[in-house]
Length: 583
Image 1 (cartoon, rainbow, N blue to C red):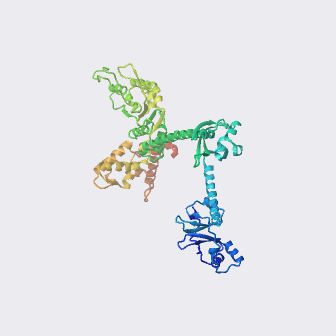
Image 2 (cartoon, helix red, strand yellow):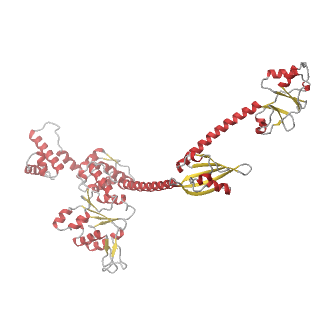
Image 3 (cartoon, helix red, strand yellow):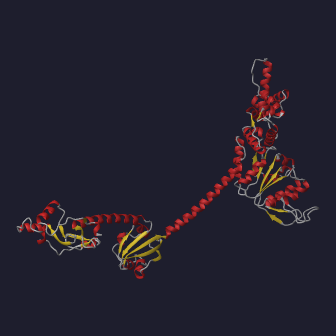
């Protein structure tokens, strides 16, 4: 609006003022080209310009000559609320600006208009630059025509999608481009005809499929002045969708693998494994948990075969399924077949009238753990072999086979190879069960685990019985040196007994079972070292006894011990008997 750019509160004169007063104003203010002449009420009466004053002096007018005699009264004026565009239409360089009451409130000159135009031009340039940046940054193509269908703009995304360069289409009408085969159909033409947005699918010469949407732009009169067409590459969208689906599948795969890894971690977290032997066993168990192979776990009683079996099941894909434990040595031989394979109604006297599922059927979609498999009666071994081979079971007294989806883990403390040689265990069943063998060494062969197991069981039974007992380091040394014939199970029982029976807060050496204290003294004697001067013969015997003991303890056999000690095997046997050392 004019009031935004005009010179406000302009200098004014009265009709009775002299031309000298006007001249002084023009001399003092070089930018003033005209001075409004107003009455007492500030209403406009006329206008005097610099040219009027110069002409008056040229005609030898007196200094006190009233300006009323030379002012013009037919003055072109502007209202302060007019638009700036209206001022450009006025040919006069200096224009008085009036308010709605006709009073002079400002002056507008060409200089004002030029400064305004320049400022607006800079703003237009800035907006145009910003608009260009927006159009060029779009991933979709833009194709813009005027209201007659003449192409005036395309962006680089349009060139990339269509393969059509800007110079091929700028300045040409869409009808001309269709006639020349550039396009098979023009959305712009449809928009100009229908005067509303139009969307079509289109196959272009680059082999791409695109979605084209044309939108009309109207002026104040409702006429279409622009048609803006958006071109979106559906081929790229389809590829992106495919990539998204592949990424989703990959994410699901990774989530499944991560879940499996977490399951493995959770499954083996509670197993104490600080020795290299146990770490290797857990590594094998974690690998075999990922597949359905049959596993044979061997080792002495109490080493934790059932714990490893449970961990393998928990870490496997069957972890959510049942884990059925069967102790083949604990079930009477007459009942073992029906317990394992189930029975039909009336199969034998005392049988359930509706029949009963066996352990294998109960383990469906899960794992069956056949502990003490070496105790399985010979006459049942062929039936177990058939279940493993055919993956089906026939109940006692039945004839129909029941399909099975069960993983088998077996365990034993017996030497099955020796039993096969002796004919008490079927060779074919042995090889069916022994697909992935896992041997758990006795606790005496992995002493690094003992202190950690002690701490584990201390925490377990302190929590169970509401105690806060500690154990001295010397007591831990005694327990670590004990050979633990009952393995982990024996160690756990001893710790539970100490937690329950010891009245002091700290478990000392004196609180340990007498057998462990006595054995420790013997072991100390066997590991004798010279503390003071003693008869040479006695010292030789003590060192000899300690060396033989250590060699037999480490190498297990008299033959290997003799080889390391560089003596005959008979010498080792004789000396061991002399010193009361048994292997």
